[in-house]
Length: 111
Length: 116
Image 1 (cartoon, chains in turn brown, blue):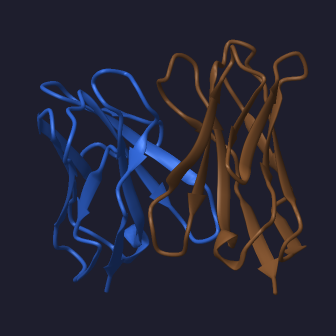
Image 2 (cartoon, rainbow over the protein chains, first blue to last red):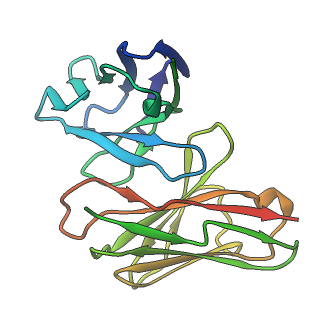
Image 3 (cartoon, each protein chain N blue to C red):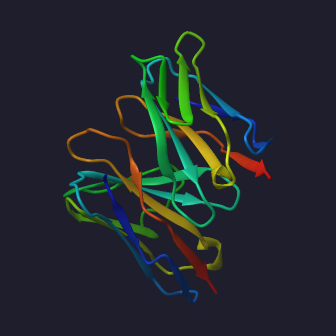
């Protein structure tokens, strides 16, 4: 079955710098890759997603890149702000069905 | 955008009692909803897939008689933790995706269950 690995588990960056979180997946049939942000005590919130027919997608300070050949995708956050501090999860699925989750990355933005 | 409402946000119950958690899609219909459990500092663990009008599909290791799921309509799924024990204490989260298939999965705000 599908397996998703996420790195790093914790990432600390200075406010204003960029943050990059990487995920790899095992099943080449996966075609949907969302990223979620989870704040303490809350449910995950979708922040950006990408499908396998696209290599990159951007939404203001957030971007996701996908390399199908290498089977990895990354989340890029530029000009980080204190409110970006949270746990970020990547996921992968085949046909928009069951999501297979990464282990999560705790992002800490240092003032 | 798609909104999923989950209630209650937190609940404390005594051992041996049952607790019901509701998950509603407010502005869309969903034939399928998912129930997750999350332990502190860990990722989400899929417990079961709730299908409208039919039996839920449980993941391996999840007791179907303990975690009862009912998906009676296209906008409501419930999870009942029966005969709760302290080890059932956890953060439970539901998610749903619009029937149209457009858009990603939307999650509820989660329910913190504490069994004392």
